[in-house]
Length: 455
Ligand code: TRP
Image (cartoon, rainbow, N blue to C red; front, side):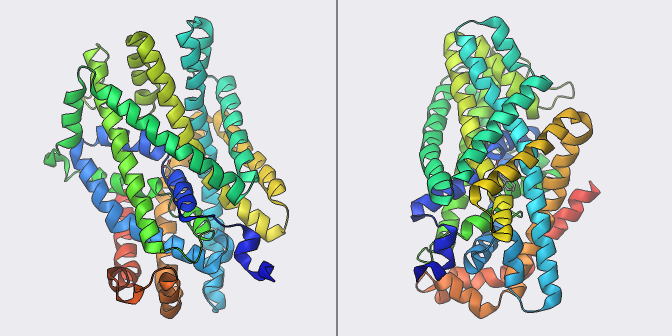
């Protein structure tokens, strides 16, 4: 019976477009629209953009392929997948431990991600109230408080869980294919609007013309690598689990390349929006430099500088703000569902429970973690972010490269790549990637990691 096909029991994306929408939905998130432009602003503009582009294709794309290949080959969740690649008991244990670590990190990333998404989502009704000149409501919604933050984090988590509970096709794929085109349209509209405003061209110049004097700054390369890994959702098994829902008829290296290209393209577009917007704000008399002469970045940029800009532009600004925060919320949602999918499939497939039960159980635990962070914000927030994204993601990335390169047998690897890709054996991908993922990728990641820890 067809039911013995693991894929049909587990759910599968219905088309290549469905997978690309879901995987780019995962990849395109706050990392692109918030992280990338703000990092670019604080690392001297164009030089960071260049480093990011190079690292994405040198490191992140090959690592993405490792996850997609392991996922589709094993058709398993993060914990089940790695032990499946080997018969050696010791390696099986290492695989399991790595898998657990990945699931834990995915959950922790989600716990702070929903907090940030909640801040942004609160700005949507705030902008609406602003357009209707309801001053007290606007200020309650737009200013951080424990109550507001917990409330919006909760609503956002609820949205995330209700999509994941519906499953791969009906939930993740359906919502990604609806939301991603909307996101691209909103973004193009915003870029076109902002670039016509006075001051925008100065920002464009900073963004596009590299200032090579900063290229020797050690923070530049590690920042760009961390950004590329976060942006492509690597290391924690998100792409592995999405890979496990890809049809055997798809050409994986090509599909993965689309995902990396679209993700990078949208990060680039977001830079075209935010950096010029900063200089439009300066033109309006808003301070855009910190006291040490660096550009304002991080939460201040998104939650203060840009809202002041929107305010200064009157009613038009109100609408720009509304669309902008809607855009961020959508981007965050298609990413958060991919993070939640990691622990959910682990619980689902380990304890053989129903998807909706697994989703609500895991969802409640992660929301509990978010509340813990919110209540101990100064103690936990920054620490959780650097533990997960700065240290754990690269380490997990190395492990996944090593498993794909050394543990998965070369013949099986070729067979997996050849399904859906005729002529794989003679392709450039097959000539380069297997050796690359064994030696070059892990070494480069480790080098950068050491650099990162030392700085
Ligand atoms: N890539 C997403 C972004 O840019 C966030 C994301 C989704 C993520 N899944 C992940 C980050 C897994 C790390 C790990 O916002």
